[in-house]
Length: 316
Image 1: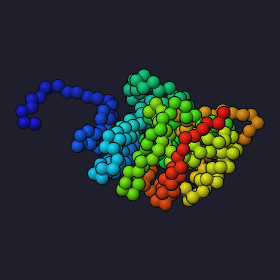
Image 2: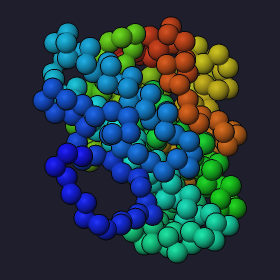
Image 3: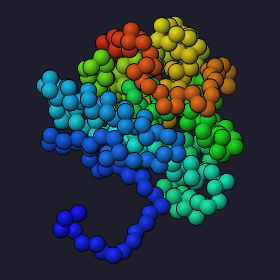
C-alpha cells in the first residue's frame, strides 16, 4: 500500500460476477478467478478453474512445440474460457430471476431480467441460456458451461414448474443447413496434445466435424426422416458409450443443439413416426470431467471418425 492514499469512501456491489475482456496476450494468460468469476449458485468455481487450467496447460505445451499457429491457439483458449464463464453468469441470472422464493432479492432480479432480456418461458429461457453456443464449449458433446442439455432443461423445469419442450420430440423431419457456413478448425485436447480437427463456422457458432456431430452430419447429408436417423444412430453409435441407449441419447442431445443453433431445420410430418428420446435426470451431466467421460479408445475412435470430413451436399 506504499504511496497510496485512502479516498475515505465506501462502495458496494450486488453482483460480483465478472469476466475479463481478454485472457491471452504476448507471454501472458489469465486463468482461474483472475480470468473471471461467476456467482457460485451452481458451485462451478472449481470446475471452471480446472477446465481452464487444463486447456491452458495444453495451450502452453502446444505453443512450445511450435507446430500450430500461436494466434489460433490463443484465440481458442480466450474465446472458450470467456464463453464458459459468461455462460455461468447467465445461469446465475436465470437462477435469481426464476427463483421467486428468495423475496429479499426480488428487486435485484427484476433489474437482472431487464438487463438481460430474459423472458421466463421455458423455450425462450432455454434459447437465451444457449446463446453462448452449445458446441463451442466441447466438440464432443452438446453442452454450455460444462452442463449438458438435459441438465439445463431439468434445472429450468424445477424453477419454472413446467417442462421445456424438446424440438426432437415434436418433429420428425430434420434437414441439414450449412448455408453461409465456412470451413474452420476446432482444437481437440487429447493425451497431452492439441489436435486440429475440422469444423463449420457461422456467425460465431461452431459445428464440429468430429465425433457425434460428424456422425449426425453424415446421416443428415443423405436422409431427413426421423425413423431412418434413429436406425442409423443405433448402428453408428455402437461402442462410443458403454451403454448403447446412452449413446443414442447423447446423439439426440447433439441433434437438439444443432436445431437450436440453426444447423438443422426441423419440421413435423403427420404421417411419420417421431424420434424416441428421454430427458434423463436433473443432475445428469453436471460438472462432468470430460477427460473421464469416455475411455481413451472411444476418444480415439471419435477422432478417427473425422478423418473423412468432406464437403456435404444438402439434399433438396
